Amino acid sequence: MDNNELREEERQLWNLWKGSFKRIFGRVVQDMSEQTGLSEGDFGVLDRLAQLGAGKLRQQELANSMNWDKSRLSHHLTRMEKRGLVRREPLDTDRGIQVVITPEGTAALEEALPVVARAIREHFLNQLTDQDRESIVRLGQRTRKGPPPPPKMESD
Image (cartoon, rainbow, N blue to C red; front, side, top):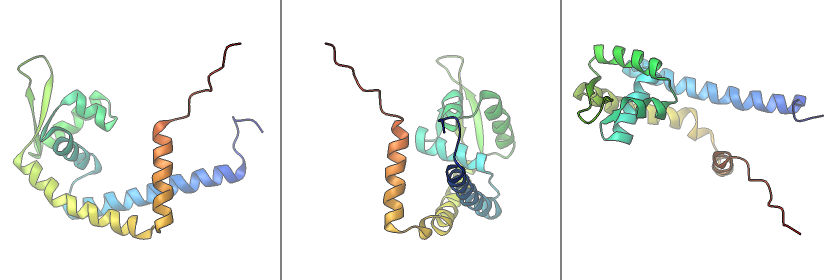
């Protein structure tokens, strides 16, 4: 079998991994949304503004941190601005736009953080053994690094 095909057990493993992540993530988002009214995107924007930019980030930096294209973020920010969660301001130094969390956005994030923490604990962390945690850490570290470089060939 070549590397362009998956064996049945590999396909099952991939689907199990992917499905588990989607179910857990979906439950966390559902708990947060039901209890706070924030969407996954709302929380992502507010959390990044608070964590990465002390309450403000250039719009392009925010888009990059979320792996969203500029248009998607712009439309989402428009909806968040209408709800008073963020505001956009032109930067004095260049043509960029800065996204700023509002007091209402800060309050919404502060309300959501403990809800998200409880949901992550309930739907994910409490299900893990110590061995599971160690395996996840090792896998995360290994996959974050990417594949190893090819071996160097010694010259004759």
